[in-house]
Amino acid sequence: MELALLGDSHIPSREPHIPNSFLETIRSVDHVIHTGDFDSKGALADAQDLAPALTAVHGNMDPQIGLPTVATVEVGGVEFVVTHGTGSRGGWEQRVADAVAEHATTDDAVGVAGHTHELTDTVYDGVRILNPGSVTGANPADRPTMVTVTAEDGDLDVTVHEL
Image (tube, rainbow, N blue to C red):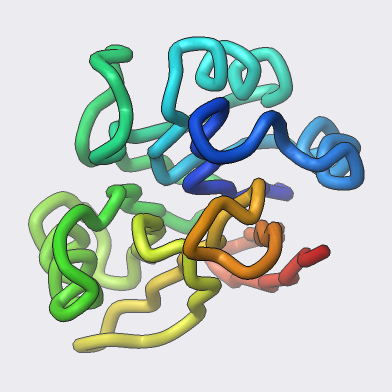
């Protein structure tokens, strides 16, 4: 199963749209995870139209658009716990690891979070944490980034996409 991890699109307040070069990749995957900060109902609707299946959470810059603050999804034998990661930069990894500990049903769940706009693939307190950065390159990001993940039989293969 192929996933696209997106986050911090901030459409339209900071950027007008997702770069065209990312759209084909997003459309081609089996599942899309978005870490929040869509910024508008229209940006959420666009993501729903692009994604064959979408798991998304509410970010601190989102209006009330009906999304949870934490979501879990199992794809390819891997459990993903998705949260925005809202708060100061200090303690971001701990907040994400805590969300995984609270919401995961397996011991090897992967945390997916945004908020920092910083591309991240790290292990913190025994939890693998992925942050796809900002799919539009919204400030404070210095470029658009996203991640694709192949999940098969509980194993992950992560690929970074950046412009």
